[in-house]
Amino acid sequence: MGKTMYEELISAIAGCTADMKYAAGGGRLGLDTQVSAYDLLDRLLEMKDMLVPEPALKEAAEEYCRLYAKEAENVSAAFDPDRTKKEAEDRLTPFKDRLNEARFQAAAAASLHEFAKEVFDIWQTQGIFARRRALRELRERAGFRLESHRIGNYVAKTFDLMNEAQVRFAGAQQALFAADVKYKVCQGTYGEIYKILCTMCD
Image (cartoon, rainbow, N blue to C red; front, side, top):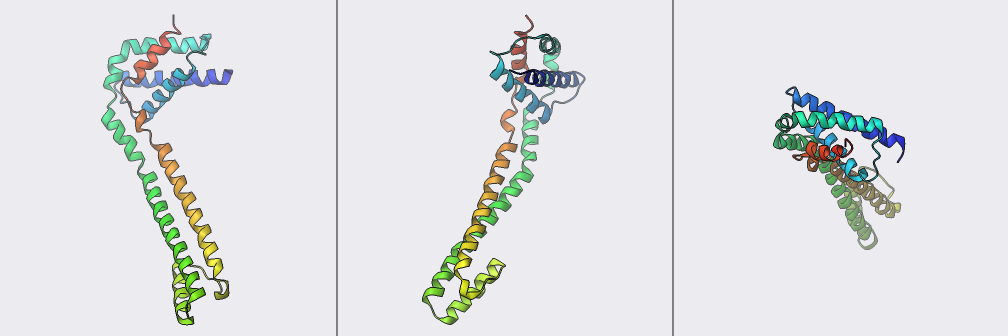
């Protein structure tokens, strides 16, 4: 494990220590502090069998443990899980809005592609009036123009548009999933960190 990873870990421990000091002074531990604590705990659980308590890391661990031992009750009181989960949910609103818009666009693009295939079939099998009427409707729905003798290009073009819309929809889904941190809001995170860090202070 490289030195940079140790430095990141020390910085994360120091950050959570600072958050506890804020809580000890009457501050509220909101979403960002809970996410930071959860991420630190997750990292410690992954690395605990590899950690070597070198001086700077041990010093950061000792400072955390001293403060937690003294202020555990205040730290717990500063955390409101229901309020924090609502904060996490509220932050998802713009991601949900983008997802709904992308879902609508993907559905519209798929519908347009299906209609383009229907028009292509009409163009091959029906008379001139039906063909012109169908082509006019397709052009109005598509928002772009192609020559009538290249009707097959509508199918290919709308297929590309449908795929692009589906990619945007998938991206919006992934962005929403990545932004959803409600699972990181849980009681006892600082205490679990304390248990692990205490092993470095012996």
